[in-house]
Amino acid sequence: MATIQIPDALLVKNYIAGDENALAVLIQRHQSKIYGFIYSKMADRDVADDIFQDTFIKVIKTLKSNSYNEEGKFLPWVMRISHNLIVDHYRKNKKMPMLRETEEFSIFSILTDSSLNAEGRIITDVIEKDLRKIIQELPNDQKEVLMMRIYQDYSFNEIAELTGVSINTALGRMRYAILNLRKVIEKNQIILTN
Amino acid sequence: MAKLYSKKALANTKMLPKKQTISFILNYSKALNVVKVGNLNFEIIAN
Image 1 (cartoon, rainbow over the protein chains, first blue to last red):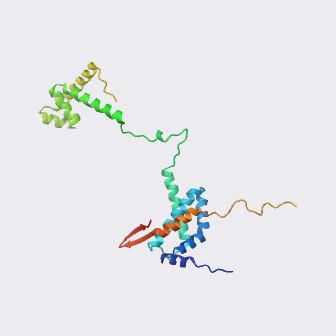
Image 2 (image 1 turned 180 degrees about the vertical axis):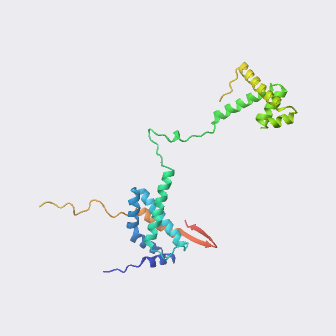
Image 3 (image 1 turned 90 degrees about the vertical axis):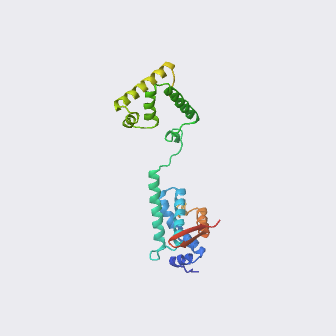
């Protein structure tokens, strides 16, 4: 018995009007061609299925939002969508290659967390406290310059202006402050490394 | 007479997507509702 095939355009029209079965017929009719086309480019069934699915999600969204252009034919249009998705897939994978954990390769060899762990944070805190204590031991003029330079981030020009000395004096005081700090650290054998 | 083995295709030449994929697409289509408000399209997916 001969069956009359409803044209794609009519099925699309019916689908837009709310006939969900029309989509089932369209998929049934074209799935082989579309899937075959995708599979010929991907050669991975799972990826091909994903792209097939994404293609029809796009088709559904376009049809339901009434932005489908009737001029074109349905199958070439769907093929073009799947072609674009395939291109996108390759582009995305090129930029972000999939890495699998193997015996020779560990993902953590390229993924690092530069923030300190709990121990590191405690050690840094201790070092900073020790350093502040040592700074308090410095003569007042040196301490002032060092605090303004390191903790308040003033330039030597500004320090000179604010403390009423020449820039060379400010630089000299900074130099002596650091030399004295080194001396205290060496003398008391304080370890200031993390 | 030698047997003809070539009559039956060994591999299925017709490539088809998985049944789950088709069923997902059809269910997605049933669930999706696009509402147009002015220039914006709102996609509503029913559970």
